[in-house]
Length: 215
Figure 1 (cartoon, one colour):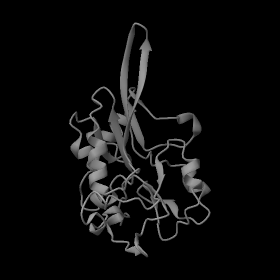
Figure 2 (cartoon, helix red, strand yellow; figure 1 turned 120 degrees about the vertical axis):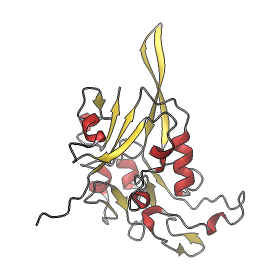
Figure 3 (cartoon, helix red, strand yellow; figure 1 turned 90 degrees about the vertical axis):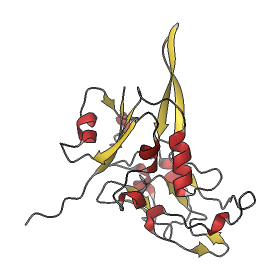
C-alpha cells in the first residue's frame, strides 16, 4: 500500500493581475490577529521599464517557505523548521528571541513580537485566541505566548488543516493568487510554476522558494 501523499504547498502570484489594493495585507492581519508592527503579507512596489515607458509594479511578499531556508539553518534551538508539507513554521515554546532568523531571511519576511498590543484601542483585543498553527498557546505571564519570539507567515496553516486556502488567496480581488500542491503535476499551481512566465525572488541565493511569480 502506498504511503499517503503529503502535499508540498506552494503559491503562485500573477503580477499582471495584482492591482496593489493591499486586500491581502488586511485579510492576513485580520485572520492572524497580528499585533502592531507585525504584518506577514505586504505589497512592495517597484518601477519597471525605461523612460518614458515606465510603470509601477506591485509585488506581494508573503514568506517564501524556502526549501533551503536560511532561517532554519541559523536557528540555534531548532525552533524554526520546515515541515513535510514544505511550510516553514516556528515553535514559540522553543524560540529564545535571538533574532538570528530575522537577520538571515533575505526577503524580510520575519518580525519580532515585542509585546505590542491593540488593547488600548480595541476592547478585549488580547482575549481573542490567535489561530496560528490551530492551537491556543496560552500566555507568558501577562503577555501572549508569542511575546519575545519571531513571527511569520505560515500560509495560514490552521486554514489549510480545515481544507481552506490562505486568507490572502481567498480575498484577492484580482484573483492574482493561487495556492496548491507543487508536487501534483495536474494542479494549477504546479503547471503555472513550470510555465515560461514563472520566476522566483532572489533565485540566485539557492533558497528554493515555494512562492512563484508570473510576469
